[in-house]
Length: 121
Image (cartoon, rainbow, N blue to C red; front, side, top):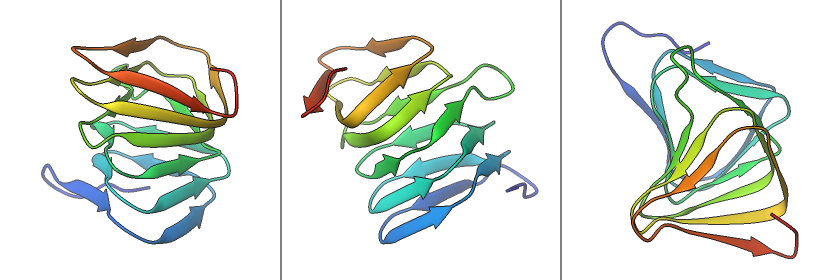
């Protein structure tokens, strides 16, 4: 569990890392590298993928219903299940690899794009 006093943002900017699960009260940005999560991710602050790759995670909605945002630098979801809403922001590009299980709403805004690499979306 990630929970620090005050409002902070945790950033994963590079490298290849694997964890069992993530529960964060803070904001999380995946701006580079790859993060494999073998179980669930729940971020109760904002959760942004903008330049990084999220692999195999089951993304849960935050306590206030917030989901995942794909930023302008784009992002990759690789074999991910979305159980919380997601938004591909203005000019953002989401690339889906190895399938995407969508159990919530996925919205594109102002030029946001979703592409698939070798799998149905």
